[in-house]
Length: 364
Image (cartoon, rainbow, N blue to C red; front, top):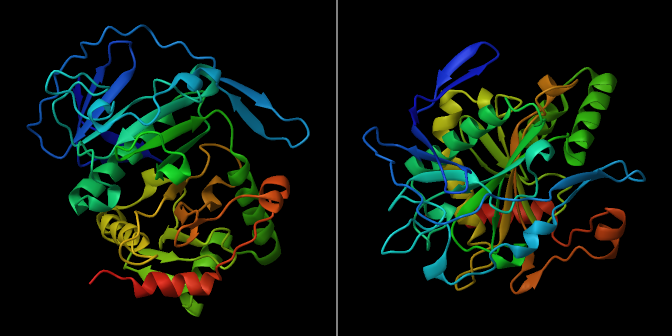
């Protein structure tokens, strides 16, 4: 099915700048193509003899800590570091069938075959950024990166309509050191049936700050970084990227729209247009941090969005967190006793030094 992608948020209808085609894989999972071309035809059929997906995803509450844990034993059987010619995220061509039946694609999104969350426990989707197996997000053109942003936005809007989904998390894990099992450039989207602990902490801090000052915490953080300047990595007309004052990771950057919004749906056209320029430059700088000849920098890129309901939603500030676990050439930042046992991070790289390094490696 081909549809005109329209979003309605707080009564404002906005049409996404993409062509979206919805279809089904052989086992019934949903597959979506996002194309920048109006004439793209996505009618390939999944010819694999797949059985219906059976999951054992279950959410359990830790009564001592008050958080949630997803139990998903079926994920033990997921594909692990396949050779490039057996990649399940590449297009189906030359007689080989993959998760994506088309012979090429711009951006594709499908329900994860091995989800951490499923049914009443939420939803997990895979986002393939490009059909090029050997590329990375940083290799995308601005048009391609903008298309990914539109896909993230559309998925956020559609998952918001599911009664079991309370919050949407769009993210990318990049690099074997992070634990990535498929080398193809891709990310994931989780639709959680609860508000995550990290977001709960932000909401509590935002409420406490407002109670004490009458101001918004996200606005004050961005204002402080702009005024002090020492931790700012780069700044555009609509976005600002900085290393936070109390960064947890050796190299960690937070990217905020200057006009605070609660989630991706609320970004205006100007912010959407500028985002690919800023974000691609950040990713390219990350690959230069440790000098020439170094392997690509492993990282996690995580969109922090407000929950769909509840007190404090309007005060939340959408932002993207980008960080690497590599602390210097050939050395990783491990979460050892203090971090893993007590959630108290110890950072070996001063945030001001990290920001200076990320400014030094700007694209020529």
